[in-house]
Image (cartoon, rainbow, N blue to C red; front, side, top):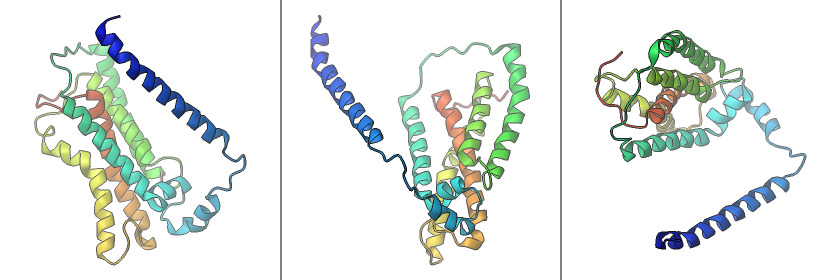
Length: 227
């Protein structure tokens, strides 16, 4: 065993012990959960009419516990900034996509965009919403990247950054405006709750989709020709 291997052995043992303790703790927490938990479904049902949506999941994520969703958007943006800080892979050679993938991207990308729009709209009263729509939009972006598409010079600069922070920015902006008019942060007035939730979800969908595609690209987009 080399000197470097001997130095890494205590660290590996410590890491194995910590991971084992974490696994035991998580297992104990799961096994100790009550079989019949009351939950908060009744409270959600009582306040559903004033939430602005009829889907309880969307009501929880975008109204009752909007702080969680706000932080999730922040974490996703921080993850992208972390990937960009690594600088990508130098000298990476990208193979030609071929005619099959090129044709498939031209057929599927418009369909994926329509599906994303549908999921965004239907999220108010059925399963869907910003994260589902953003994931589908991100899949469309990944398919375009696999087919060799790269953003043009106009989009790779300031417009790209504005779109990436739009979801988080609109979320925070709505909360600040509500505070300025005498309310509380992210406590929507019932008459405007539906419109505000739709505004936040629309911006979040664009940001999530673009962020996921940018994470797949793995590096900050360079200026180049658009296919």
